[in-house]
Image (cartoon, rainbow, N blue to C red):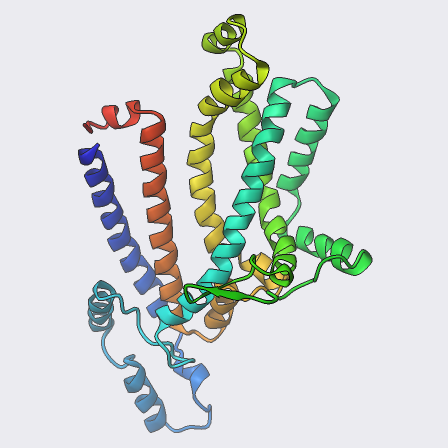
Length: 325
C-alpha cells in the first residue's frame, strides 16, 4: 500500500508541473493587460511604467522563472485589477463554490443511487421507465436552461425560494457558510439542484447498469437462496459491489462541479469563483486566471488521488496489480 501511495503522489507532482507550464505559457502569451488597465490617452512612458510595475517588461522565460519560484512558495502573483494576492481572491470566493458543489454531489448521490438501483432491480416496471426517461432529460437539457426553469417555477410562479444571491451566512472557524441559516439554505437549494441534475442523471445510469449486472451474479443468488432478507441482499451485496464505478466517476465529477460551476453561479448570481473567473478573463487579469486554473488542477489531482485510495480500499486487487504492498 505504501509503494502504491508513493507512486500515485509522484504521478500527481508530474501532472502539476506539466500543467503549470501549459497554464503559464497559454495565458501570458495572449493579449496585453496594460491596454485595459491604463487610460488609452496615456503616453508611451506611462505604458512602459505600467508594464514594469506589473513585471510584464521582462522576457517571458524570466517571468516564468518568477512564476515557478512563487508557485513553490505558494505565491501565485498579485491581481492586476484588485492589487491583492491572486490566491487570496480565489480563496475568499472558494467556500461559496465548495458549499454549492458538495451539496450538489450529496443530492446527486442520495437521489441517484436509490433511483438507479430501483431501475436496475425492476428494469421493465413503469416506474423504472419513468426514472430512465427522466435521466435522459437531465442529460439532454442545457444547464443554463434548467436553471432558468427552476427560477421561473420556484421563485417566480410559486414564490417559495429566492431566485439568486447567497443569503445570510454564519462563520464556522472563520469561513462563511450558508447552510446553517434558513435564509442561506433557501438561497442554496436551487443552484445546488441545478448543478445536481446532470450528475444525478449520470449516477442513475451508472447505478442501474451496475445493479442489473450484479443482480445476476452467483453470490447474490446464493445470498437469496440462504434466505437473507431482500433489504440485506440489496443493501449489502448489491450496493457494495456497484460502488466502485460510482465512486470513481463521482470523484472526477466532483472536480468538474467545483471547477466548472460558472454557468450556475452566473444564472443564480452565486458569489463563487466562477464569477470572479469570468470578470478576470474579460480584464486579462492573468494572475487571477492562473491562480484559478492552478487551484483547479490541484483539486483535480487531489480528488483523483483520493479516488485511487478509495478504489484500492474497495478492491485490493488494484494495488496488487500495481505492485503495491
